Image (tube, rainbow, N blue to C red; front, side, top):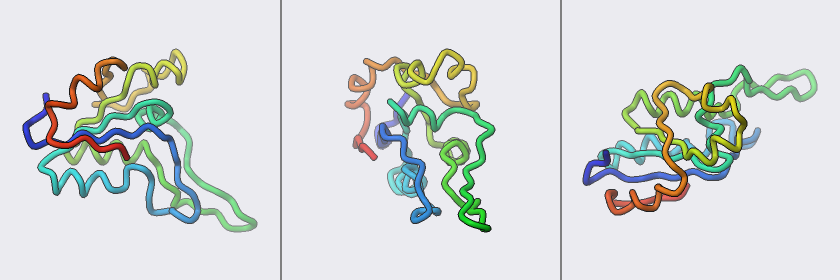
Length: 131
């Protein structure tokens, strides 16, 4: 599964960003890490498993008469990462915690892995990063 030079990136915290970080979310640096490393695999676990779900939610914030529509959209970020060649996986435990319909709402191309199996994959990677 993992090539020798690939890096494993793990995201556990589900932080959507804020008005102050409209341009960024927890996945903001992944495209550059993918490019510089020769390839990355991304695992979403815990609350961050929600990043891998299709949703109708539009990240917008209304402040007074102004609507900010430039807030981070993790689902769109995950879709762009997969299009760039990043393998995206979600831990089954995190997915289960999101409810019984979560698996049905996975973005196309996201792989589900067993929760206890993640650490056993680490030796196959050049580096393991927690973002």
